[in-house]
Image 1 (tube, rainbow, N blue to C red):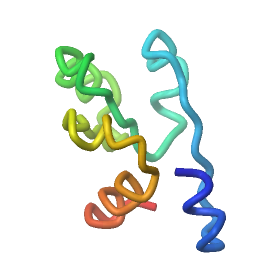
Image 2 (cartoon, rainbow, N blue to C red):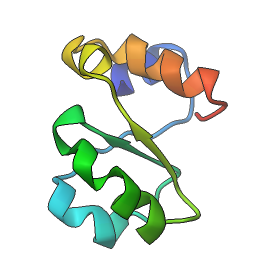
Image 3 (cartoon, rainbow, N blue to C red):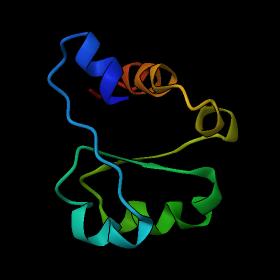
Image 4 (cartoon, rainbow, N blue to C red):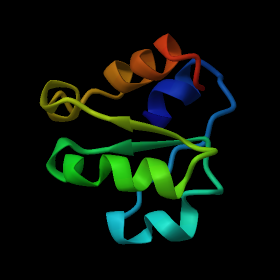
Length: 80
């Protein structure tokens, strides 16, 4: 994702964290992307960070390993 944003000269910073850190960083980011494997935590994450957009990725989106797919998803949602 970072390479896609950089190539487009977009001022966006992408970081990846272990889910165990979501409560530490969740209020300091614009969006939280959750892998489908932890979809069980979607409602909990959304409730815990009401001012942060939380998106649960599909297996196809996550498995694509293509940053452009995720950047396009965020653009569609008006994020980024």
